[in-house]
Length: 305
Image (cartoon, rainbow, N blue to C red):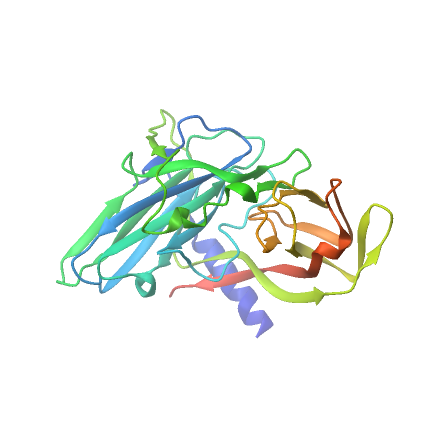
């Protein structure tokens, strides 16, 4: 089985083709930078639930794709990139099971590949067969809305997350349109090679989760040792944290929302862990931590033959 998986990975890597950005429809926020995560969204109306639909997206960074608030696929995000790689990558996902018969919200959160500033942030083609049997196709353009998210890359290579501005409805049909602006169309003078995954792709996926509920403390916070080092991310569950309270968890800097229960975890950051030191500002108390999840991430192969 292991050798079959290696062979299939080889097949789809070889079958990956490079094109000169053919049929891409790039959009970006009006003033892109090298740190900010960006939310994108667009609502499409239908008379009846489409029989079949796919999304082909391209990006120069990392993205999570949502349809009607559902995270599309089982990957943690797309695509799997080497350090410093910011060339456009295109992936196709089947989204038929996520669709509704009336309004369908396509949304994405984008992370740049630091330190690059790129106006080729996202390209989306949403296409399929309507309930009537007629084909449909929609492209990303300036009818899409965008805004800076409540998270960003920090100078340590981790993430800054301000949960006071969570706006959990940003990918829902009904949302607060304040601070959202039209995305900007981008047509570059120079075409870049576009890596198109035709038959499959690899992406980061959760391999295993280990939960800790008892912790060692020192005079500054919590120290947790992981007896088996791993590569992935941490998810911290808090209870009774104060609004505006600041917590540091390795290279993750988090500002609390003040909700009774809240979770601290990065959107895109994957790091190596053997121990973790958790501390915070003067309001932080180790007793606020109810659990810590060590989430190991591995590479998963996805196929669509």
